[in-house]
Image 1 (cartoon, rainbow, N blue to C red):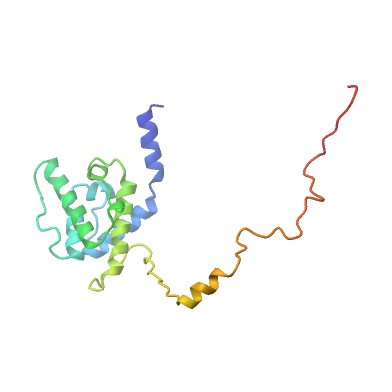
Image 2: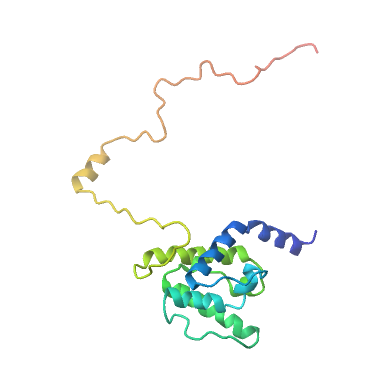
Length: 184
């Protein structure tokens, strides 16, 4: 098996079709329109038009220009516009996918992961009343300690690593003992 084929197989193995289906259903619900029957999820979002319309629903005006015709560079421009809008919406850079992963269908699993990151970002926007995608992100649980509480902790000897009080190696024998046979 060639290296390229092995890499493609590994990337395809990471793809979760159930997550693809959930992302597709979320997009359909937000946009209020179904994907065409018989068209694969990745083929329908490949040109970035659907994604830009999705972003404009979540944050109106975030993708001002959506190219509906033109060559591959115009379609890739749509994807880039969507990615910039995602960043502005609050999706971390580490959750974004490279443009070619979608346009050339190199890693659709990463695209779906990015859509889940966008769905999680909707939780942090109270103005969005529509559906969310993925689990709600946790909130920070900041704790405040007084100086007295911090000083009290310094006098305690921690036993995180355990204690050796009363520990011996007596009775420890794993496996058979070593037998020395002379004369053989």
